[in-house]
Each structure stands twice: as structure tokens, then as C-alpha cells.
Length: 111
Image 1 (cartoon, helix red, strand yellow):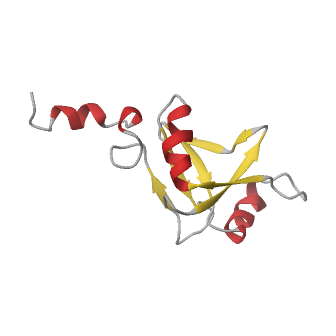
Image 2 (cartoon, one colour):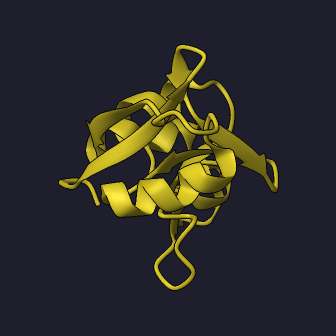
């Protein structure tokens, strides 16, 4: 995922995201077909959906931390058998924004 270029819908000057389960999910798509499936339900009618092409690493390392709330990456959410979720936890997002960082620190045996 980190080396993959993902297509991220752009809306009102920002990246399209959705909130679910207390997490803000930046939505990315692996190709134009997957983006088109999403656009059918969430797009601007008969116009093409504007999008940005971003590396997965940039989304996880730069964009997610800048959101100021628990955030992760949802990939191909309009694909029944291919959706992938990268939640805001240690090992996926930078440690400083991982929601489980306090739990990890308490259980690491140091102290």
C-alpha cells in the first residue's frame, strides 16, 4: 500500500473522507474502475469526479496526521471483495497519532 499510487476523490478543495466508528477514513482507490464504482453513489452526478493521485505512504505519513483526529485509510470501499482498511494504530500510522499508543506504551515492559 505504501508504494501504491491511490486515486483519492477531491471535494470542496479537500480530500474526500467519511467518518465511521469514531475514525475519519480517507478514501483511496487503486484504479479508475474502482473510483468509478464509488463515484456512481457519491459523485457529482453526470460529471467526472475530481481526484488526486497520491502515494499511500504520503496519505498515511503526512495527510492522516494532519487531520487532528483519529484517521485511517480505506481503500476500494466500493469493491465488495477487495476493500482494505488501514486503521489509526501503531505500525500503520505514525506513533504520535496512533489511537493505541498509550496501550502499547503501558504494555511494553519498560518502566
